[in-house]
Image 1 (tube, rainbow, N blue to C red):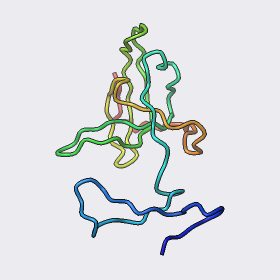
Image 2 (image 1 turned 120 degrees about the vertical axis):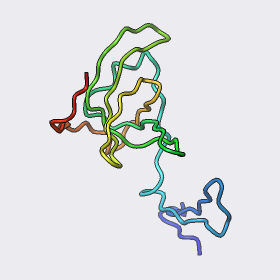
Image 3 (image 1 turned 90 degrees about the horizontal axis):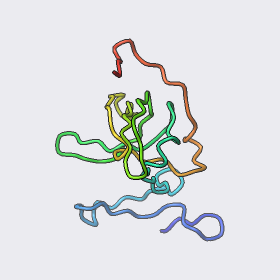
Image 4 (image 1 turned 120 degrees about the horizontal axis):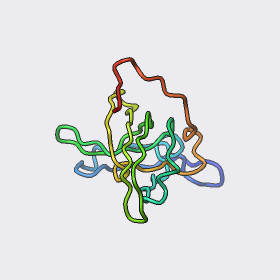
Length: 131
């Protein structure tokens, strides 16, 4: 059974993850489980990143290196030119609230129009010291 929604477009799709067999496929709701690709930032776009922004941030942990949802907590602006950005961003991952200092090359902006892309006020715990 393949569930279809309005205008015959599927509401769910069958997904096979890399490294898994077809017996481990999953049905994923398109609206809840799939979103547009996040977009890497160019050095000339650094000024668009603000404290409180919801972003995707690359994170290497143990044997896993993937992009996670995160919020910009603080920004230390650095020198720029058309090919380079030396800003440092303090991010807080939504998964476990861990914080990292990363460069622009580690973050991607969320697609325009995403409801969850709104900025939110960041409350720093007392232990958080950026610089």
